[in-house]
Amino acid sequence: MNQEKLLLPAEQPQDPELPVEPKVESVARLPRWIWAVTLGCPLLVVVSWWWFADRDHAIAHAVSFVSIVMTTASLLVWFVCCSDYQRYWRLWAAGLALSGALVMVLLFRLEGVNGELIPRLRLRWAASRALDQPTAQAVDLSTTTPADFPQFLGPQRNAAIENLTLAVNWQQQPPRRLWSHGVGEGWSGFAAVNGYAVTMEQRGEQEWVTCYQIKTGKLCWKHVIEARHQTFLGGVGPRSTPTIHEGNVYALGATGILRCLQGASGALLWQQDLLQLAGTDLASDLKAVAWGRSASPLLVDDKVVIPLGGSPSGTKTSLIALDKQTGKPLWRSGDRQVSYSSPTMMTLAGQRQIVTVNEDNVSGHDLQTGQVLWQHDWDGQSNASASVSQPVAIAADRLLLSKGYQQGAMALRIEPANGKSPSHPYVATSTWTNPAVLKTKFTNLTLLDGFAYGLSDGILECVSVGDGSRQWKRGRYGHGQLLRVGRQLLVLSEKGT
Image (cartoon, rainbow, N blue to C red; front, side, top):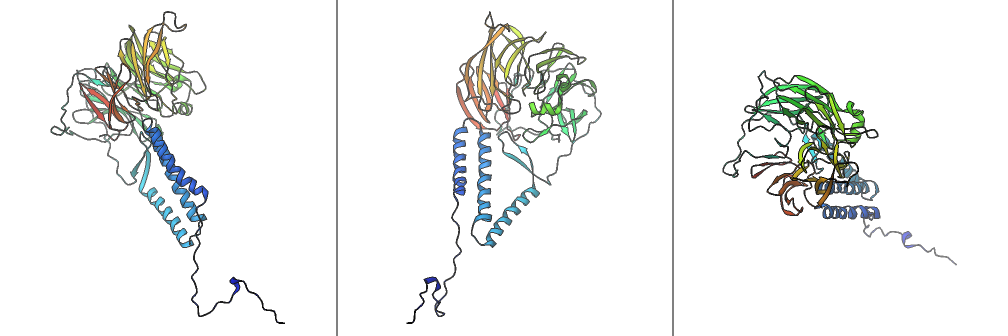
């Protein structure tokens, strides 16, 4: 008996007259890890913006950037390496991604980030502005006028000018540019006396102190040292503002070189290396004070006072006072690392004193001896959540602190210890704290009629100094600067507008 061979469907012979069905390319389903990334990252962005909307926009921007990169990279890796799409399409996608990245690298240069961690890009062929060289010209910084702005934040170091009125309708009377000149890199402000303005700038590997004529913008003199500070987050160049005092200029560079210059010519009178005085070196200092020495010298009586600090593992000194004529050390005081704030003079509880914000506290010091009169905790870390903003006196016995990094504001009352403190003649107690207001990350406050005004995480805000309650908040200017001129607020945005 003949046995017929049974054929499986796949083995059945194909009828040549029937049309052949085209093969369909199978596409692999998205693996679970792709779903986790593509759904998890956008969800993380939404949550971060909800959580940090009124806290710290920089963190939300950082989370958003990382999430976008992770999602895009994950989808690209899956499509090119793991999917079942035709090889042609996978190679095309890989080539497109590489070409796009190459074009971005060839066209743009990453110059750092702004105050909210948004990258700053610049076209590689963009021309730099020409920088002037000094012209021989007599300079008089010894003569003072009511219009002088001789130090950081003005005559009283309080971000206020009382004897000037600005036109308030800039639609009908807009500011008029008188001249424009290129300057070197840096974050230094101007000190102005008798029609001349002094600042600091980075030009290549050199750190300059420069004097300009305000009327013309001409560069009158310079003093140069070989020094350069540069970090990705902190940018390039010096960051403190010089002080003009009795015809001389006092300037602190980002690497810790303090100079006293003759105001008439810029000639060096004396120079001190603060890192050497503190017993540390540049490499160690960068670990502790990551974004450079930023304090503006305080001139009072016969002294120039400046934060000193120290090595991360060694002895630290909060403040040092130097003889303003010779640079000779007069006293040292305190035991804290430096912050990015500057010392200021205040009279609190009837006591004339120097108040300084250190890395992780704030303290008051006797002017003659440097003795610590009082101190109070103020969280901070000079290589992370740095303290930058100036303390502000708000009453005869009270001062106001402000800071970004979700810390906000706190008011302190200073009063005689009367036995309450075993080590200090005065005590500081908090009268109110509010982490939701006055988050002045890189900026400072100014006061008017019992209210404090500041750029709180980039938005202009008004707060009552009595209880810390917010009165209003509006207008995003970024992490720029604020100056009160009479009863008007002059705001310079982070972009310089």
